[in-house]
Image (cartoon, rainbow, N blue to C red):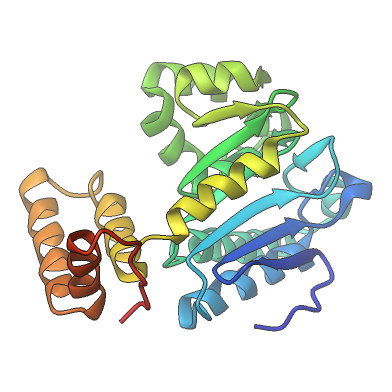
Length: 264
Protein backbone atom coordinates (compact mmCIF):
# COMPACT_ATOMS: atom_id res chain seq x y z
CA UNK A 1 0.00 0.00 0.00
CA UNK A 2 1.28 3.47 -0.82
CA UNK A 3 1.70 5.96 2.01
CA UNK A 4 1.58 9.33 0.22
CA UNK A 5 -2.08 10.16 0.69
CA UNK A 6 -3.29 13.76 0.59
CA UNK A 7 -6.11 13.52 3.15
CA UNK A 8 -4.94 10.62 5.33
CA UNK A 9 -1.77 9.91 7.28
CA UNK A 10 -0.75 6.27 7.76
CA UNK A 11 1.54 5.11 10.56
CA UNK A 12 2.49 1.54 11.30
CA UNK A 13 2.87 0.71 15.00
CA UNK A 14 5.17 -2.21 15.71
CA UNK A 15 4.54 -5.06 13.27
CA UNK A 16 0.80 -5.56 13.14
CA UNK A 17 -1.05 -2.30 13.91
CA UNK A 18 -1.84 0.50 11.46
CA UNK A 19 -3.06 3.95 12.53
CA UNK A 20 -5.10 5.65 9.81
CA UNK A 21 -5.58 9.35 10.57
CA UNK A 22 -8.08 11.54 8.75
CA UNK A 23 -5.89 14.54 7.99
CA UNK A 24 -7.87 17.68 7.17
CA UNK A 25 -7.80 19.43 10.57
CA UNK A 26 -8.35 22.85 9.00
CA UNK A 27 -11.94 21.77 8.18
CA UNK A 28 -12.51 19.50 11.20
CA UNK A 29 -11.54 16.48 9.06
CA UNK A 30 -14.69 16.93 6.96
CA UNK A 31 -14.86 14.54 4.02
CA UNK A 32 -14.47 15.91 0.52
CA UNK A 33 -14.48 13.80 -2.63
CA UNK A 34 -10.71 13.28 -2.49
CA UNK A 35 -10.99 11.97 1.04
CA UNK A 36 -13.72 9.58 -0.01
CA UNK A 37 -11.60 8.24 -2.85
CA UNK A 38 -8.59 7.79 -0.57
CA UNK A 39 -10.64 6.05 2.11
CA UNK A 40 -11.85 3.64 -0.54
CA UNK A 41 -8.30 3.03 -1.78
CA UNK A 42 -6.81 2.45 1.67
CA UNK A 43 -9.35 -0.07 2.83
CA UNK A 44 -9.73 -1.83 -0.51
CA UNK A 45 -5.95 -2.26 -0.49
CA UNK A 46 -6.21 -3.96 2.91
CA UNK A 47 -8.96 -6.20 1.56
CA UNK A 48 -6.61 -7.36 -1.19
CA UNK A 49 -3.52 -7.67 1.03
CA UNK A 50 -3.37 -7.10 4.78
CA UNK A 51 0.44 -6.84 4.56
CA UNK A 52 0.73 -8.63 7.91
CA UNK A 53 -1.54 -6.16 9.69
CA UNK A 54 -3.90 -7.50 12.33
CA UNK A 55 -5.60 -4.31 13.60
CA UNK A 56 -6.39 -0.87 12.17
CA UNK A 57 -7.03 2.19 14.33
CA UNK A 58 -9.01 4.99 12.64
CA UNK A 59 -8.80 8.47 14.16
CA UNK A 60 -8.78 12.17 13.25
CA UNK A 61 -6.03 14.80 13.26
CA UNK A 62 -6.15 17.27 16.12
CA UNK A 63 -7.96 17.38 19.45
CA UNK A 64 -11.23 18.97 18.33
CA UNK A 65 -12.71 16.77 15.62
CA UNK A 66 -12.77 13.12 14.65
CA UNK A 67 -14.74 13.97 11.51
CA UNK A 68 -17.36 16.66 10.90
CA UNK A 69 -19.07 14.64 8.14
CA UNK A 70 -19.35 15.74 4.54
CA UNK A 71 -17.53 18.93 3.51
CA UNK A 72 -20.47 21.30 3.03
CA UNK A 73 -18.26 24.02 1.54
CA UNK A 74 -17.29 21.68 -1.28
CA UNK A 75 -20.92 20.62 -1.63
CA UNK A 76 -22.17 24.20 -1.99
CA UNK A 77 -23.31 24.71 -5.56
CA UNK A 78 -22.98 21.05 -6.56
CA UNK A 79 -25.38 19.88 -9.21
CA UNK A 80 -27.58 16.92 -8.38
CA UNK A 81 -25.38 14.75 -10.61
CA UNK A 82 -22.20 15.91 -8.84
CA UNK A 83 -23.78 15.26 -5.44
CA UNK A 84 -24.80 11.74 -6.47
CA UNK A 85 -21.31 11.04 -7.82
CA UNK A 86 -19.70 12.14 -4.56
CA UNK A 87 -22.12 10.12 -2.52
CA UNK A 88 -21.43 7.05 -4.66
CA UNK A 89 -17.74 7.50 -3.78
CA UNK A 90 -18.67 7.75 -0.09
CA UNK A 91 -20.84 4.63 -0.38
CA UNK A 92 -17.91 2.65 -1.77
CA UNK A 93 -15.71 3.96 1.04
CA UNK A 94 -18.25 2.81 3.61
CA UNK A 95 -18.27 -0.71 2.20
CA UNK A 96 -14.47 -0.76 1.98
CA UNK A 97 -14.24 -0.05 5.73
CA UNK A 98 -16.91 -2.60 6.58
CA UNK A 99 -15.28 -5.23 4.37
CA UNK A 100 -11.83 -4.73 5.86
CA UNK A 101 -10.78 -8.25 6.87
CA UNK A 102 -8.93 -7.20 10.04
CA UNK A 103 -10.55 -5.53 13.07
CA UNK A 104 -10.93 -1.76 12.83
CA UNK A 105 -11.17 0.36 16.00
CA UNK A 106 -12.17 4.03 16.01
CA UNK A 107 -10.38 6.39 18.41
CA UNK A 108 -12.93 9.22 18.41
CA UNK A 109 -10.83 12.20 19.45
CA UNK A 110 -13.43 14.95 19.05
CA UNK A 111 -16.64 15.86 17.26
CA UNK A 112 -18.14 13.05 15.17
CA UNK A 113 -21.05 14.59 13.31
CA UNK A 114 -23.09 13.34 10.36
CA UNK A 115 -20.90 11.10 8.24
CA UNK A 116 -18.25 11.27 10.96
CA UNK A 117 -20.62 9.66 13.43
CA UNK A 118 -21.52 7.08 10.79
CA UNK A 119 -17.80 6.39 10.26
CA UNK A 120 -17.45 5.65 13.98
CA UNK A 121 -20.32 3.18 13.65
CA UNK A 122 -18.98 1.44 10.54
CA UNK A 123 -15.87 0.18 12.33
CA UNK A 124 -15.90 -2.84 14.64
CA UNK A 125 -15.97 -0.85 17.87
CA UNK A 126 -14.98 2.57 19.18
CA UNK A 127 -13.25 4.30 22.07
CA UNK A 128 -13.94 8.00 22.59
CA UNK A 129 -12.31 10.97 24.24
CA UNK A 130 -14.34 12.42 27.11
CA UNK A 131 -14.58 15.62 25.06
CA UNK A 132 -16.02 13.89 21.99
CA UNK A 133 -19.53 14.70 20.85
CA UNK A 134 -21.74 12.83 18.43
CA UNK A 135 -24.67 13.75 16.21
CA UNK A 136 -26.49 12.67 13.08
CA UNK A 137 -27.46 16.08 11.74
CA UNK A 138 -28.56 15.12 8.23
CA UNK A 139 -32.28 15.88 8.63
CA UNK A 140 -31.40 19.47 9.57
CA UNK A 141 -29.86 19.81 6.09
CA UNK A 142 -32.72 18.32 4.10
CA UNK A 143 -31.13 14.89 3.69
CA UNK A 144 -30.87 11.80 5.92
CA UNK A 145 -28.10 9.46 7.06
CA UNK A 146 -26.69 7.76 3.98
CA UNK A 147 -23.61 5.93 5.25
CA UNK A 148 -25.44 3.12 7.07
CA UNK A 149 -26.53 5.37 9.93
CA UNK A 150 -30.11 4.12 9.90
CA UNK A 151 -28.82 0.54 9.82
CA UNK A 152 -26.07 0.66 12.46
CA UNK A 153 -27.52 3.04 15.03
CA UNK A 154 -30.59 0.95 15.98
CA UNK A 155 -28.33 -2.07 16.51
CA UNK A 156 -26.10 -0.04 18.82
CA UNK A 157 -28.62 1.98 20.85
CA UNK A 158 -32.02 0.46 20.11
CA UNK A 159 -34.69 1.57 17.66
CA UNK A 160 -36.44 4.15 19.81
CA UNK A 161 -33.23 5.90 20.87
CA UNK A 162 -32.00 5.81 17.26
CA UNK A 163 -35.18 7.51 16.07
CA UNK A 164 -34.79 10.24 18.66
CA UNK A 165 -31.15 10.85 17.68
CA UNK A 166 -31.85 10.92 13.93
CA UNK A 167 -35.18 12.80 14.05
CA UNK A 168 -33.86 15.62 16.28
CA UNK A 169 -30.34 15.89 14.89
CA UNK A 170 -29.21 16.90 18.38
CA UNK A 171 -25.68 16.31 19.64
CA UNK A 172 -24.91 14.02 22.56
CA UNK A 173 -21.86 13.48 24.74
CA UNK A 174 -19.28 10.70 24.84
CA UNK A 175 -20.68 9.58 28.18
CA UNK A 176 -24.17 9.28 26.67
CA UNK A 177 -22.70 7.42 23.69
CA UNK A 178 -21.14 4.98 26.16
CA UNK A 179 -24.31 4.58 28.23
CA UNK A 180 -26.38 3.94 25.09
CA UNK A 181 -23.94 1.42 23.61
CA UNK A 182 -22.45 3.44 20.75
CA UNK A 183 -18.90 3.44 22.11
CA UNK A 184 -17.13 0.82 24.20
CA UNK A 185 -15.03 3.07 26.41
CA UNK A 186 -14.58 6.74 27.30
CA UNK A 187 -10.99 7.87 27.89
CA UNK A 188 -9.33 11.15 28.74
CA UNK A 189 -8.09 13.07 25.70
CA UNK A 190 -4.52 12.41 26.81
CA UNK A 191 -4.92 8.65 27.18
CA UNK A 192 -7.27 7.91 24.26
CA UNK A 193 -4.67 6.77 21.75
CA UNK A 194 -2.59 4.96 24.36
CA UNK A 195 -5.59 2.96 25.55
CA UNK A 196 -6.73 2.24 22.00
CA UNK A 197 -3.28 0.99 21.05
CA UNK A 198 -3.18 -1.15 24.20
CA UNK A 199 -6.39 -2.87 23.10
CA UNK A 200 -5.08 -3.17 19.56
CA UNK A 201 -1.98 -4.91 20.90
CA UNK A 202 -4.13 -7.40 22.81
CA UNK A 203 -6.02 -8.17 19.60
CA UNK A 204 -2.85 -8.37 17.49
CA UNK A 205 -1.45 -11.09 19.77
CA UNK A 206 -4.18 -13.46 18.60
CA UNK A 207 -4.29 -15.71 15.54
CA UNK A 208 -4.90 -13.59 12.39
CA UNK A 209 -7.17 -16.08 10.63
CA UNK A 210 -9.18 -16.57 13.82
CA UNK A 211 -9.71 -12.81 14.06
CA UNK A 212 -10.76 -12.47 10.43
CA UNK A 213 -13.18 -15.40 10.47
CA UNK A 214 -14.66 -14.40 13.81
CA UNK A 215 -15.19 -10.87 12.48
CA UNK A 216 -17.04 -12.16 9.42
CA UNK A 217 -19.20 -14.47 11.54
CA UNK A 218 -20.16 -11.70 13.98
CA UNK A 219 -20.92 -9.31 11.11
CA UNK A 220 -23.37 -11.72 9.53
CA UNK A 221 -25.18 -12.50 12.78
CA UNK A 222 -27.70 -9.66 12.50
CA UNK A 223 -28.29 -10.18 8.78
CA UNK A 224 -29.64 -13.74 8.80
CA UNK A 225 -31.67 -16.01 11.06
CA UNK A 226 -29.80 -17.59 13.95
CA UNK A 227 -29.59 -21.08 12.47
CA UNK A 228 -28.15 -19.77 9.19
CA UNK A 229 -25.69 -17.65 11.14
CA UNK A 230 -24.63 -20.69 13.11
CA UNK A 231 -24.00 -22.64 9.93
CA UNK A 232 -21.74 -19.80 8.76
CA UNK A 233 -19.97 -19.87 12.13
CA UNK A 234 -19.37 -23.63 11.88
CA UNK A 235 -18.02 -23.31 8.35
CA UNK A 236 -15.59 -20.63 9.52
CA UNK A 237 -14.65 -22.68 12.59
CA UNK A 238 -13.89 -25.81 10.60
CA UNK A 239 -11.61 -23.90 8.25
CA UNK A 240 -9.43 -23.05 11.25
CA UNK A 241 -8.97 -26.64 12.38
CA UNK A 242 -6.35 -27.36 9.71
CA UNK A 243 -4.29 -24.19 10.23
CA UNK A 244 -0.78 -24.12 11.64
CA UNK A 245 -1.92 -21.47 14.11
CA UNK A 246 -4.50 -23.85 15.61
CA UNK A 247 -1.76 -26.39 16.27
CA UNK A 248 0.56 -23.67 17.60
CA UNK A 249 -2.10 -22.30 19.95
CA UNK A 250 -2.78 -25.65 21.59
CA UNK A 251 0.92 -26.52 21.76
CA UNK A 252 1.81 -23.17 23.33
CA UNK A 253 -0.94 -23.59 25.93
CA UNK A 254 0.40 -27.00 26.95
CA UNK A 255 4.00 -25.76 26.98
CA UNK A 256 2.95 -22.77 29.08
CA UNK A 257 4.35 -20.18 26.69
CA UNK A 258 3.07 -17.38 24.49
CA UNK A 259 2.00 -18.63 21.04
CA UNK A 260 3.80 -17.44 17.93
CA UNK A 261 0.99 -16.99 15.42
CA UNK A 262 1.97 -16.55 11.78
CA UNK A 263 -1.39 -16.38 10.03
CA UNK A 264 -0.92 -19.79 8.42
